Length: 103
Ligand code: SF4
Ligand code: F3S
Ligand code: ZN
View 1 (cartoon, rainbow, N blue to C red):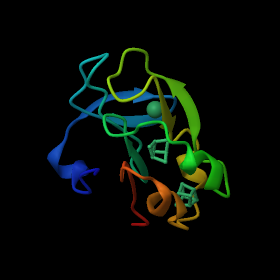
View 2: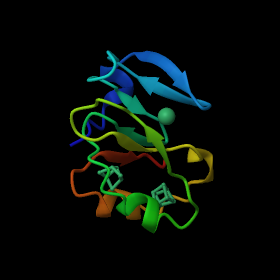
View 3: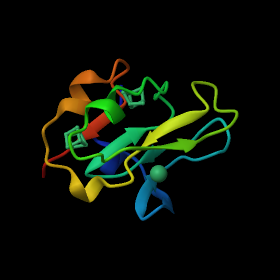
View 4: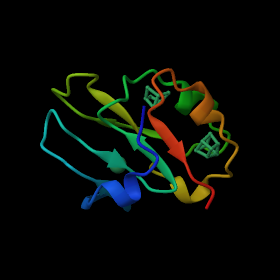
């Protein structure tokens, strides 16, 4: 699953749609972690979709990741500032790709 210590173990590699991308990034096969308060490890996400379906405030949006070995779309935490820390997404993701840190 996602490494919950990513903020210290990884470096900022990029920005995407207003949120941080934590490296390493080497497209298309290595995509890193998108978001910080709501963090999705794109290299673990298999596009199950439970997080998009269950988030009560629609934090996630699909983003295209062509040629990534796990899936060609990912759940992007596009609206992470809206998160109400309910932890549903963390509980439902079958591959433990999401970390939510209420701070
Ligand atoms: Fe949405 Fe709850 Fe996950 Fe926050 S913790 S992104 S509100 S499902
Ligand atoms: Fe991906 Fe897990 Fe959501 S596999 S689409 S982060 S439920
Ligand atoms: Zn993103």
